[in-house]
Length: 145
Image (cartoon, rainbow, N blue to C red; front, side, top):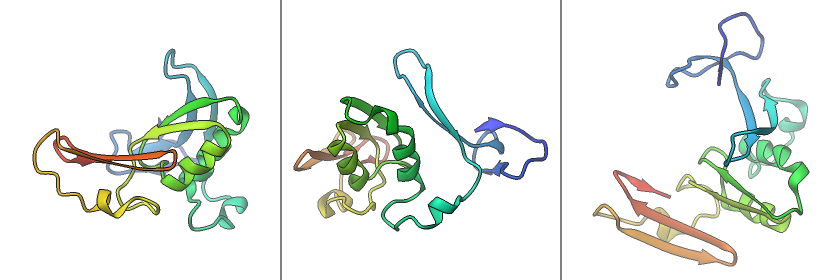
């Protein structure tokens, strides 16, 4: 979120964030030096996004747009739980883009055992694999997937 309080049709308001008003910007950056390779300003729902399937949400559309130029080049992409899902990881793997990130437990494609795992002590974990995907749940202060 880039702070901005002026008048703008695509200004966002996120009450839970430290910067409540601003311009939402998605970007793909190098994790080693922080250089931004590509970015996309979120201007609201677009015509192409209205026709997307339920499985391909906004996060998947953003990731697909930002990784278009690195397809087939064996890159690794790290993301947070807003963007990640098992179906997105599988589709990117076919294009030689390897993914790692936290995921929301109830995303479509997550194993039931991972969703319902009762981890009691800090450091406890459960691991499941399916093909090239690996799902892990571990207990920190709360359960992280």
